[in-house]
Image (cartoon, rainbow, N blue to C red):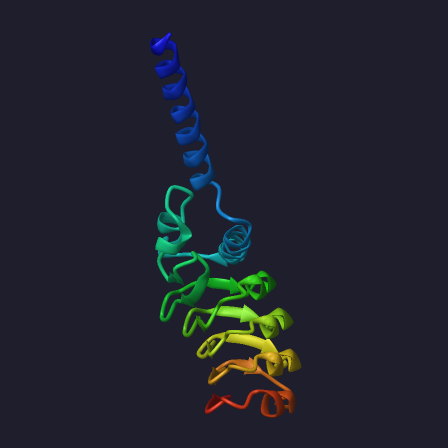
Length: 178
């Protein structure tokens, strides 16, 4: 009888261990949102050097991917690529990276309009998209980023007025380059 009790306990322990490892492979919903945003970013870009293709893989946590920084809760806090030839446009899904504090895509050859969704990044402090081929106007929604300290959009093909919302809603904005 004691033998069967031990076998039963071992089976229960194995089931618990299997459930824990399955849970560890599935990111929490908030991290899943970050993963989806990063994969949408990757899908919008050509990567001539193969940095994203070789490093941004399903076999590694996105927090270990090149150019990505995370906090202790596995939430994306930084996305930084300077002087890397990433060709394409900036995906609106980056607005879903709700803990992003640094977005640097300077001198990367991204083009097209600035997505309005970047204005929904409440923790963003640094937005450096300089030396690219961005076009269109500066979205007024960037004025929603109340913690923004550095805004660098210089050396792009942006046109139109600077939205007044940038100056009214972003009290910490100390560096602005247009």
